[in-house]
Length: 139
Image 1 (cartoon, helix red, strand yellow):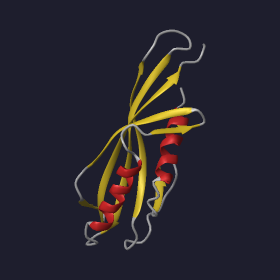
Image 2 (tube, one colour):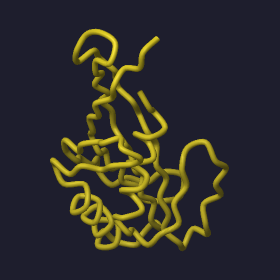
Image 3 (cartoon, rainbow, N blue to C red):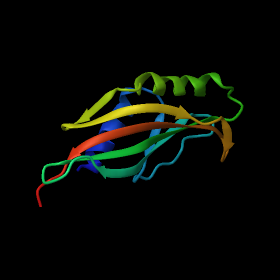
């Protein structure tokens, strides 16, 4: 199983979605730009890894949520932030397969929460639900 490859496939997809804004990721220090500049942050939230088939060389199924927090200036209206939501929805369509070094990750669906003020920004969290099959190594 490769948690790193699953995450890399998702991040590669986020880059391909071409949001055009500064983006921070988990595990690295990040300072948001000025309050007049939009930005995003991503987080990988693995939900579970379950046995899909038994034995050495069998497969496991990992599910999770790849969350992208979109942060736009307060009082910017909704057009820009909803445009970014739409770019994510357009790229991460249900059934899309993301591949990184042979590891395939399949998008199941995309949801978002309501627009709300957070720490001086207006924010929407976009949740990209995914599933990945991995081959269990010999022990």
